[in-house]
Image (cartoon, rainbow, N blue to C red; front, side, top):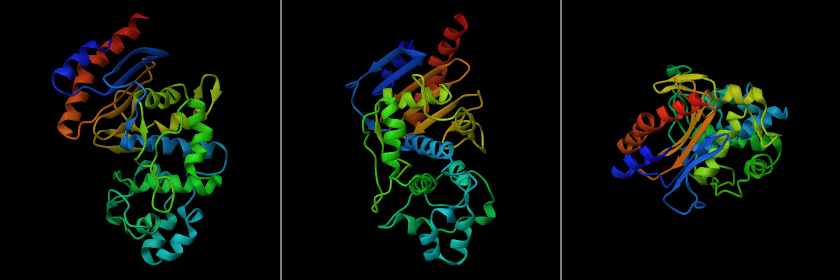
Amino acid sequence: MLEKFLSAAREEGLLPYGMELRMDDIVAESWEQTPGRRYPVYSAAKSFTASAVGMAVDEGKLSLEDPLERYFEPELNQAGGDTGKFWRQVTIRRLLTMTIPGLPFRPSGDDWLADCFSKMPDLEGGVCFSYSNLPAYLAGVAVERAVGENTVDYLERKLFRPLGIDHPTVQFCPKGHFYGATGMELTAHELGKLGQLYLNRGVWKGQRILSEAWCQEAVSCQADNREGGYGYFFWVRPDGGYTIRGKWGQRCYIFPEEQTVVSWVSHLPEKEDTDRQEELFQKLLVPEIRAARKKQ
């Protein structure tokens, strides 16, 4: 089923390093490199951070309506002034939906928490979608403080191990907190497992990992943007599906109606190349996916 897409992508120099298509099980796969080799998935890491938040919510250790002052009192006391006052009232939900306009793209310096809380957002922008790595970083640290263990250890115990993802490479800030926004390395197969978990509404091989309620809410449109919508660190598409995305061609497309997951990892630093790769995917592979399901 992948042949047309892969042939066109190869001809244009846009071939993924690894690609996998699942319809209940693995139906088709392609590996230009060693199948078990991991690659940076960049912002696809955010969807794993969202899952950590979801598990903490399911356990009753965190609420999306919690203000940040519940988890960052020392840092907010240090920030002080109008900036600290603003951040105290920001909820976990606003982090997950990226509805804090005017933030820089990434944290910096030796103390990322202090750096985040020194930034005064664009208050005139209101509550609207604005992409940044800061919300995912803060959400990951909030989970750490809510559950009482490093977020990576929490993910290892509650998500990675059950999914069979063996100690993925992750990035930490200078103070040792999980970055949560990027810095993770995975195979296309491993990336697809998270997509399949959400397609299964939180169940993996008979084991419930996330609640059905969380999985439905996380991939529903919570904030509008120019590409359709945004859930809780998931991109929501107009066709009713949702996507886990990282820059330079890291993708996991979930098609609920067709019960299909397609994941791939690439290295395409030019935006026009990633756009063209997705264009070929939509033109050549998506129609085949939909036609195959109609035949069943």
